[in-house]
Length: 279
Length: 222
Image (cartoon, rainbow over all chains, first blue to last red; front, side, top):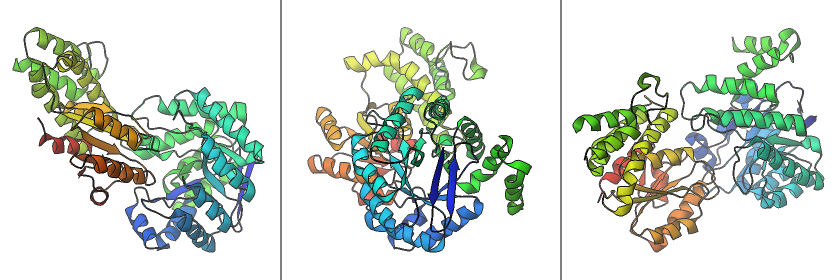
């Protein structure tokens, strides 16, 4: 299955056969106090700098999250989208729990965006699926519903199937639905990552959709987070992960290596190119 | 008597739950917090001596090590499980009222937020500090906090939020509690929460780590 997203000029194809597409996670004020205070003062320079550095480090798509306490993201998200699109041509992933902000951003955005995210709750279907359909956006289907996060891979996959069913009814094309199996910290539960890997496998074999996930938090509460994240990402890609949301400055090396090992990088072109760009 | 309390404390610090557990590997085959606590009670040591003389100081050591990044979340969870291995023998004394704890703390992650690790760590540390903890879980509405406060008058409140977007619900929950119970102490925490935010929303205390919450509560111990 091939999901095609576009920015002002650049088109990105996410293919279930690979190679891995990186969605840069860093434009997000959580844990970035400077970014939050700049956004509060309508200073978008730190956002543009994060966009530039992530693209240079290997990001194909940029996640845009402007959440901080008291934010008017219905106003701010479209403004940031416009500022980023004035300077960069990559596709955007619009990340907000507020459907009105997503809609406002879609109105402004050029190209074909990804919505992060639609979950398995009725209210999420009602508020986001018509919007995605109207603006021709792709969606991330997050495997969480009113019962929370299941530790059973089959249940998580079933939530994905439910969201996909509803999205198709709303006129969204199957290839425009990317599933997020939910990744949880392995420090609190030694089987947490295994559950996610099994979910990815099931989604890949039974549903066949592209798969994304925020993969940096699995290492919460442990040392040497980069090694852990890289190990998990590699296994997840082998199981069917195609477009992780991660920090490209930390993860691109592991992504390029994984693609090469999986036979998706003939003559090691991308692997070598990335190595040479860093030295 | 001091010897067995030291042994119990050592089990909690190192996460030795019971004799059967293979963890930590260096203590394989030895009695754990579970057996040693039973033994201590059977030999006439008072539950409060075990709580104050072994569990509370051991969990304080664990909390400090975690604050200094000498141990990580899995080690802390092992210690908490060892503490529970001891605590299960003390609980009958708590429920009859024969042994009193320092007070009650109601804790939960605010509405819309499903993160539980940080909240669980704080709950364990507070319990290990000698308090009764009422853990409401994740995605807890203001109404549920208020109802639980009504059922447990005078309890301390701990609120967790892990997303910039759910911090707003923390603010709303603090306001809802303040409206009805102006005198209660509210503790807040979570990755995006800061001391400034704590002050701005009218909460009483912020700590970046679990041990900070335990230290703050000490001054109010009954």
